[in-house]
Amino acid sequence: MSEYYIVIVQKKLENSLRKLEILERFKYQFLFSFNQLHMVLYRKYRPQKFADIVGQEHVTKTLTNALATLKYGHAYLFAGPRGSGKTTIARIFAKALNCTGRKLAKDSFEPCNKCASCKEITLGKSMDLIEIDAASNRGIDEIRELRDKIRFLPTSSKFKIYIIDEVHMLTKEAFNALLKTLEEPPAHAIFVMATTEPQKVLPTILSRVQRYDFHKASQEEIKKLLDRISKQEDIKIDEDALNLLGQLSFGSYRDSLSLLEQVSSVRQTIASRITLEDVQEILGLAHEKSIFDFIEILSKRDRKLAFSFLGKLFYQGIDLENFTLKLVEIFRKIALYKIGQDQLFDLTKEQQAQAKEISGIFTIEELFSYIGKFSESIFKIKAANLPVLPLEMVVFEMTEANISESEPGSFKVKDAHDSARGGEAHGQSRAERLGPVSSPGKPSPVSLKATGERTFSQTLWPEIIKEARSHNYSLAALLRDAAIAGEEEGTITLAFKFKFHADVISGKRNTQVIEEIITKITGSQYKVLCTVDPGVVIKKPLDPDEELLNGAKEVFEVEE
Image 1: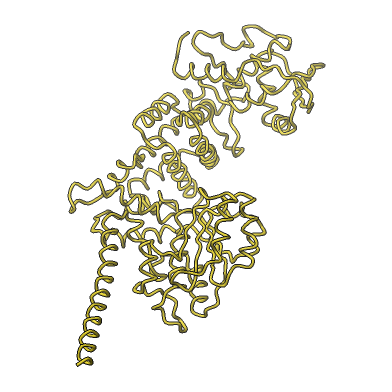
Image 2: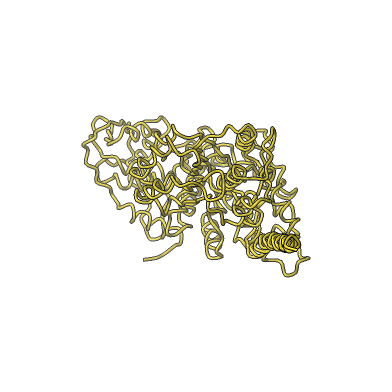
């Protein structure tokens, strides 16, 4: 009789255990499904095994080999740009190390994603995977606390794994407190550190870890990822729009998915298709047409129209940094086409025709000069309180003088009358082409026929700088940093604080321009020599801000 009751009790216990197992399984499934409903795309589609990772083959191959052969280290450093998969791979690696369902055999490295350890790590509930944000836990006290707790065994897993994100943010004292633990950690502890700035990590730390350098994702890798996820999410999007999202993510998987989710909100219905124009509109980007329109304005040297165009972009809320990046990219494609390297294949047929037409207007020196100046302005746009100002300064300079065809990167002296006369100027001498450039309400530079010869003196220096500025803004800026050291027997000596400035002005072309300007103003021939004097005191004719203000008044025709 007693044996009968024992059998009954055993059956009830087995049924209870089976029910608990089913409930446990459904609990994980429910929690995972609930979390999926509220996750953004880059979290929802975060890879859960090595096979899901796009790119970074050099890292995954090494880690999977270590897992398959059970030869893994106790400390790793994952270094690379943001959004390249450092934390994701660290979690998959941690999951594989503690996975109880993974067969410990050759070529067995993938986590099963079914055991309790894998499910807990996936849900972020594992007690044996500790993730630390070094940006907010960067002091020595936090590291001492970690060092004290690391001695305790894992709660249910084989290893206790610490992922320290942005490890370069730790203080020097915190790094030193971590040294001994990294050198001789307990057998159950493994460190995985991630950083975007490995150069800031102490050499003593680097010598104790295995370092893996992550690369930015290629355009093809990001396009492949976006294409797969857009299909899974039933997001209908044009290929051109996907290409643009890939370019804007700058090699970051996470950024590309964030952008895809942002632009998917533009759909009015699920069946709606996202076009390139939709992406440009919702992200506040400049259309390709506006970039070609701006290049056409630059080809005409129309300063007023260029300023007006930039003003419209600014007040429309267009991202000027992105606009400039695209502008430099188009200029580069045109320059490469001009030297025989056709890079226009990713443009539309209409844009290719425009680019080919523009390549016939600009010289190769002009194109590379524009590329250089607009590239420099990108960094200034980021820091400027008025983002449009760096672009306006480039326009002001580049529409003031043409670029010489004979010397790359140098400027040809040319006045306003040359543009009107067109081909007539080519038959004139350089001295004959130097003409007065006057502003409304201001006296014109002195003419040779009107005044005859004038003796050179210090009082004429502002007038010489003004005349130089009407031809070449850069040359005038250098002359403002010069002092007249002496004048005798038809030779004017200029003193500069810096050798670089003196060398630039001493160049044959610049010296010739200055001598012709002096001849034009004084009516006498002078030679120009340059010397270097670190102790020279320079009294500038005008304050730079005042000069810039006067230039702006000339552009916009403001009367005082």
